Length: 280
Image (cartoon, rainbow, N blue to C red; front, side, top):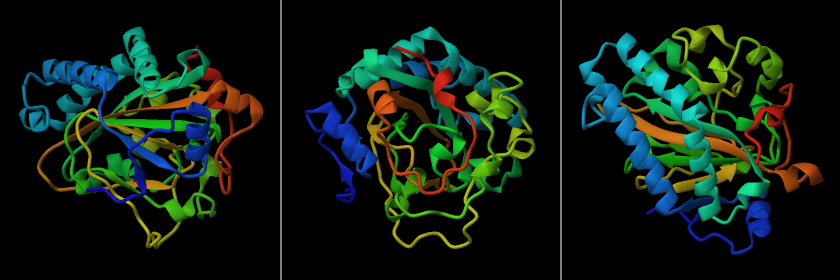
């Protein structure tokens, strides 16, 4: 059972929900019709690409290069295809958001492999960070959906005390115009084998992580919803299976217009991603 830090009931009023997210609440909601449909669709596509029913061990069939290519092309589909834009709107609507007032940065397929933390090319996956360090609005809300049931050692941790406390970081290295000047590859993620080394990913400069960390378990299709200003970190694992998840970032346009959002205590990234979000 997860700690009380993770709220399991959404406020009926979406304005109140957003206020609570900006104040640091994290909602972990059971799967619903829209998220279940999204998960089933993506799993079927992974099964096709990896030619296996068991996607969690499907990487054993392929070389690292072949695995990268097969999953990379699927990442592009999930991020760019209009079908998945509509699926985002269905997911947020089922949790009380008005799709006609929401702009979003589309779905990313995340793949965390067993032992991946020892691969220098994957190092940025494990950087402790705030998503806002990537030139996102302080009004940004993050949505994360696992494709399988996961134990705490397979997910990630939040450091809730840092929401309103600065963390030493190098977010000033991130310039959205530079990040996107060669097309959407870096936005989609892991379209080039050397991007984990050649691209500049902002991260924490802290040597010692905060003592208070909140981890969680979850079921396939659950909806984890949190502010992009939360400081968090993906956990490394050696469990001999691959973790697949989906996430997207969204902004309620009323919040952006009114300047509502989580506190900005240390974000120095440059640019504005909101202009390139999928609009209502």
